[in-house]
Image 1 (tube, helix red, strand yellow):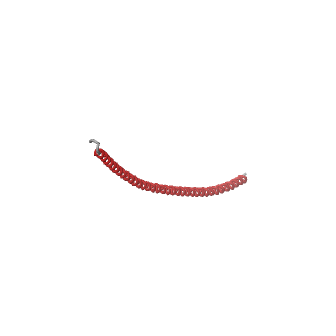
Image 2 (cartoon, rainbow, N blue to C red):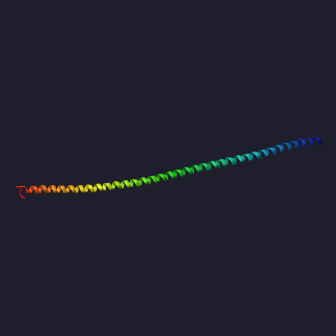
Image 3 (cartoon, helix red, strand yellow):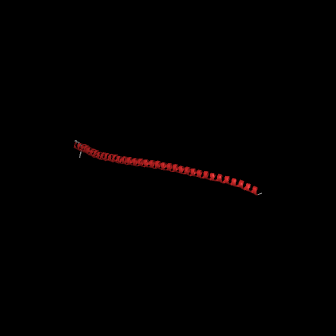
Amino acid sequence: MGAELIGILSVGAALAALILGVSHRHRDDMKGMRGEIHGLRDEVRGEIHGLRDEVRGEIHGLRDEVRGEIHGLRGEMQGMRAELREEIQGVRSEVNDLRGEVHEFRVEITDRVARIEAKVFNGAAAEPGNAA
């Protein structure tokens, strides 16, 4: 029985050594895989951060471009407003000039009508047979 026990213990020790060897190797493989996983995770995070920064840069660039366009359009609008103000002022000036000419024309017509009436009435009074 002692020999059997020693044989069983020897087989058990051999199995234990085999299991421990496999488990150590497996543990080392798992550590290696974890390292690869962490490396890949860090690489993906780096790519994501890089893409995020690139997108932010594009957004900032587009925003600045749009702001520049808006600023340019505002400047153009202000220029157009100034031109329109000048044109409106010019039209107002022309209208006022025309009003003055119309007033002068009315005064001239009124004077002519008054002279014609005076001639007609003075001529009729001066004719023989009209009693004044």
